[in-house]
Amino acid sequence: MALRQVNSAAPERSSSSSGRSTTEAKALKIHSEAERRRRERINAHLATLRRMIPDTKQMDKATLLASTINQLKDLKRRASEEATLEPIPIPSETNGITVDCHTGADEQSIYIQASISCDDRPGLLADIAAAVRGLRLRAMRADMASMGGRTRCSFVLCKEMSCDVSLMMMMSEGGVKALEEDVRQALAGAAFSESEMAAHGCSGSRSRSKRQRVLESSGFLYSDMN
Image (cartoon, rainbow, N blue to C red):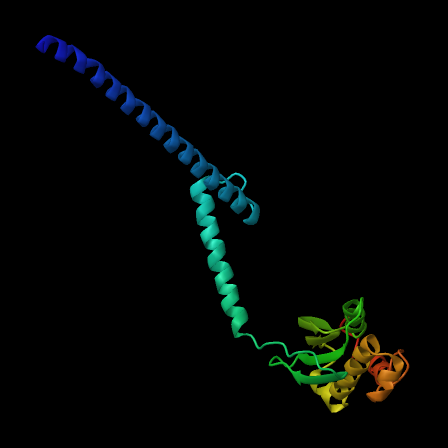
């Protein structure tokens, strides 16, 4: 009788061992599948980084991650710098132009701060850029804000004097004020209609002003750019 009990217990142990093996196999399969999906996600993220960060096609993973960290630090630094800048005012509902000239510390340059508020339209910036080029001025900075069909453009422009035209000579002849008026006329001609120009005290003609022609003939405005 005891012999028969021992023999009947052997199949139970074999069945239990087989069940554990099946469970372990399933767990291993689940683990392998999870690991495969994890690697796929990592590779997808790395591929995204390679598309976003320049010149990373030949980088290994460690170098790519280091380059990404440096890029993020640079973006954070730029964001901090932008946050310290004076915000651009919201475009005014009325047209307007402001122009202010001041001399540089080297006494060889004149800086012009100008802003214009007007209706937004296609080609506006191109027309304003052409007006600035027509005055032989160099753009140092330009900011633009648009809202509700209105736009405000702010500029910092520079006029560099040539060796044969001194800054003191230009100031003594009223050249700075004349240049200031020419900038105002040029911006108005680029942004306003002729009726709007008249409303702001600007000449209706878009040709060069008398002051501009006098400056050109005297060598004040264009001599260093020819």
